[in-house]
Figure (tube, one colour):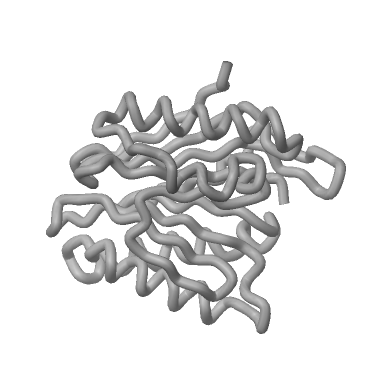
Length: 198
């Protein structure tokens, strides 16, 4: 697998941060060190983990479909509407065992004025998460790490928490590196970037 993607929301849901490492691995080989696993769309960001070839085929389609809906409606789709549509695409593209990727959408709802975080994996759909880790680094971070996390109420605080989680995963999971790609939603403003964790 070779991926760690983490997303957290502030207590008031006005701020959301999603970040991933940049390593792509195939069994024991690292084939890419700066691969972006957090993609932007009109209403937020989508992080992914799993089979790279499947993600490279499906994610541009998912992203284009969500953006197309926003364009044809003349206004941005709600976060829950976008998540339902994304799940429909995800489900229809999957085989009996699922599509081979997990998705972690972080969307801003322009009507409700807050962030929503979803999880799509293995044909399950969980909503209203306060935070989540997907990918091979999940085990390195610990299953309860997010549940025990007290989310910060500032962008700087959330970024610090996300960086600590990714640093911890990179120390324990050799498939996770220290190149971090991230997306931030802060009161409806979207920012994306990249940095190397120290």
